[in-house]
Image: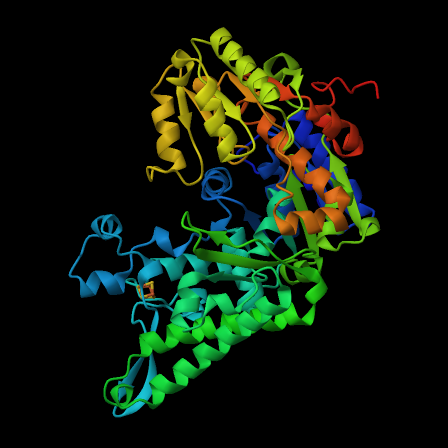
Length: 561
Ligand code: SF4
């Protein structure tokens, strides 16, 4: 190693003491031969700059993060990262041309985006079936040689630009998509020295989207299958259903191709769509049948009339699949809340091969992030009505104490949100905005938060804002954790995973809880008070003692342990 790691700190910033300390610890671990390092550091430490330092040190890298918002933040701070965004963020030139729209902004407003474009089509030419590639689509070689047309598709330009660059920035979905399906296609461009995985505690949820199968009622209808013939609680029956779906798509494709209508006027778009569905079902069947003990059938979701809507078959242990996504020689996993043992077990990493760097303290003053464990009642499936009401009365009292401020109430489920709303006093009920990832009136989470921002005493009530939202400064001066966010063990996968990996269940609960603590304190000058009402929190802290990151010791009174 020629330079010290710190010398690679992004030049436009001055490293803070805590960043210097973490960089020095990481350097030690690298020198000792570790190639996989977990960095656990709370909000405010500036992990992204530490990640950028490591990326720059190794001279070629992938940085992978969890949301568009975080991606934007990275691009702003670290310009040497070439960012890849999803197709929905770019206007499709082909659609613009067919709709006679010459203004990109208007195209975006009208929804003529790249995710709707057909980048390659099968067409019939001189009686022969050929693939026609969109004339705006550049090749990666053209981009590499800077020989692309100036009017090329902007989505592919930025994607290929990132793939040929030494340092690129991805969201998990786009990155995993390449690692799972397109490794061969881009093999010349995936040889990078280090991967920096930000928000690494979310990796499992990302991987799970790429393994297993989701079956929808529309699919069963499309395949002319009778859902009543299948047992939705039995894995073998679901494998049979997946197989029947694949068979039905294969037959459809064959019948359509042989039909006189298709011979005269081929609809290749339809065939391509069916082939994609066939591939997905056939691959899922192989994955699941190959390792049946590792898959669980979740309960089907039905509509209010009891009709089947959707069901998913998901793996319990994702470690077997995780390796596909981690290929660079060096791997850095960063998060504010991550436990080494549970993470390694979950991802199939040998603990001895992984170094753990834990930030010694929070960069924020303790006065700004006080947590009050009020121990009102224990909430669970078996709680009495009296317990529930007592907790809601306490929420009412806290809202009265903070009558002139904005705040946040976090709980574990939508029915619990509704119950809180039903029993609050009328004056406090008027302050509440329920905010979920999908809202009844079709409003997005961002829309509800911006309404909240214009209400000086507004309070958000949610079961989903535990992560991924920044309620900085006076957007929230108090937060109430009404119920500890245990994963829902009524969900079969959660139950199966919990039985097999008890560490996972505790770690998952702790992670969500600690993420919740951080929603309203986003910078050094920011402050908010947190109240925890559910006494189950003591149980979590007791069981998870060894997993609690050092940065929380002061605020949880654990400094002398
Ligand atoms: S290559 Fe780009 S412009 Fe062409 S169809 Fe695809 S998204 Fe649209």
